[in-house]
Image 1: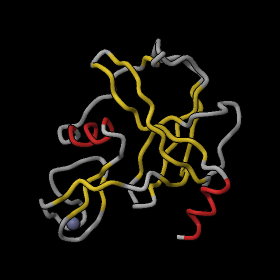
Image 2: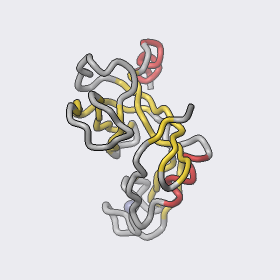
Image 3: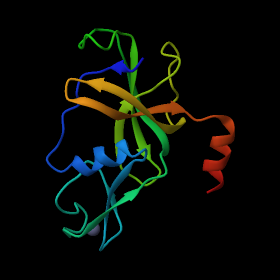
Length: 146
Ligand SMILES: [Zn+2]
């Protein structure tokens, strides 16, 4: 059974972000002039001001920068408790999502995580939601070798 979730709000420039997730990968805007990767999507580069960019896939790995556990129910589809993490992607930008797995254990700051797309039903239709899971030991070794 597909999980039901509230429809995430969409920014003005995020259609391509969600379309790529629907194709099974996370892509972010990479500036054609200075190569910086940005999130959320924007009409120009916050670093150099260029309007030229390309949607490029990211590795789908990063580290926990911060986290919180929700104990109060805000959405009917999301009974507490659940964890929300801020993740610094290997490419630089920070993203926010749920941490899947054990909801009772505090994640460590700096813990390596990897992207896992979760197909959910929302009032706006089916979509692939970017979620995070703690990386296994062999994934960590791979990440640290780079
Ligand atoms: Zn730039």
